[in-house]
Structure formats: C-alpha cells, structure tokens
Length: 193
Image 1 (tube, rainbow, N blue to C red):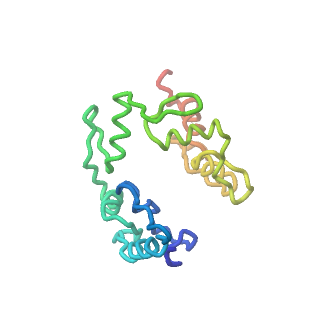
Image 2 (cartoon, one colour):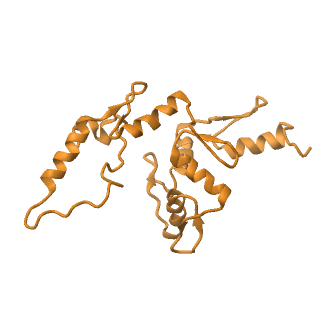
Image 3 (spheres, one colour):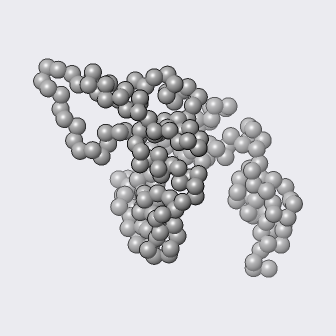
C-alpha cells in the first residue's frame, strides 16, 4: 500500500498508476505453503520510495522512461515522425496508433459485433455501447457517462464554463460543435458560401 502522500485520494496527482510489473514476463508462482504478499509489498514500497519526479510540475513516475515521455509535454519535443505523412509525436505509442490510420490495421476486435479498432482504448469505449457500462459519475447530480469526455462536457452545465469562443465576437459555448456550427451559419465563415 502506498504511503498516504502518494495515494490518489490525497489530492495530489503525482503517481502514474501503471503496473510496474506489466510487460516484464510471467510473475513467478509463490512457493507452496508460502504467500508472496510480504515480498510483493516490499517490492511495491521500494518502488514508491524511488519515484522519479518531474522538475517542471512535480508529477511522479515509477519508471524513468515514463518521466522522459512526460517531460516532452513541457518541452514540446516530438521525436517520432510518421513515415506516411510526416506528422510528429511525443510518444512512441502515439505514432503506432497514428500509423494504423494509414495502414488500415485494426488489431482490436469487438467480441460483440466484430468491428475493428486501432487501439485497445478505442475498443473499450466502443464495447460500452454494447454493455451499457457508464463508469464516469457526475459528483454534482449523479448522472453517469460512458466516456470521460462526455462527463467533462456535462459538468459545464453545473459550472457554467463555456470554453469555446466564437471567432467573430459572438457568444461562448460549452460544446465545440455548437461553436463550430455557429461559426458556419452566423459568422460567414462557411467556405461553401
């Protein structure tokens, strides 16, 4: 168990919660009659003590490679370039997903309908349309949503935030598509006119 200062509920967002053992090969089975819990606890605690902190924002990471990728969000460095269109990315995982748009590769298949997706996260979001799962709960009214972005947009009805501004000094909007439609219809920005 992480110390209180590193728990998610402490109000600090300084821990990337990726499993540090994932992708490191099979986990050895505990010896018969013995539990591996104390050893696992020592392993986890030793890693919490050696967190790598971003000097820019203070966010902490278990792995140095994660810290390096995160620091690119501050520097703007994008070392990975698409071999098809030249667009650049800060993370290797981003370019892998992006290049699948060009190749048409969709390795993640929905078990309900057979539709393919370029990333596991896209598949998980899609599968919620079949299962009805809505894990994102509004703390203000209790309404739940299948996607985090839907909750973010909904919460603006409670806060009154309108982050999208008309480019021609028109009204502000809670949703991007409403601002976009306003610009097309009311601000003479329609390229078809």
